[in-house]
Image (cartoon, rainbow, N blue to C red; front, side, top):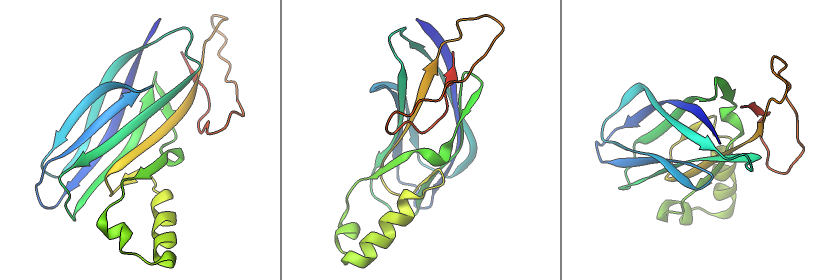
Length: 161
């Protein structure tokens, strides 16, 4: 077991003051549950997680949920795992269906989905975003080596632990 420090720096835009929740998971295990009711900048969520020796790939999920409102946004500024950045642009964003999405015609739907998938670390719709990274164990002291794996959906370089 290896305990690793994690941090996520983020901004919140909450125009109507309704509560929404941010839940953070690693490999389907809840790490943090945050509630936001007002706009704020430069928030930092930190926690430690113990990776087992069997874990080769880590999946970090950030879930945005709550009472529907028009003006809301979660902007992820950076994700750090063991003092190493995770590329925020490579997450897979899964938007929760809403009546607005269902009201779009096929062309509008395709255009909006494309714009949403190219998220840039910004979540304006309820749903979740997933980041995957490989866990690289440094077996030789003093010699850090990154390995690159061509596994499907692996979107970040290895994180040395």
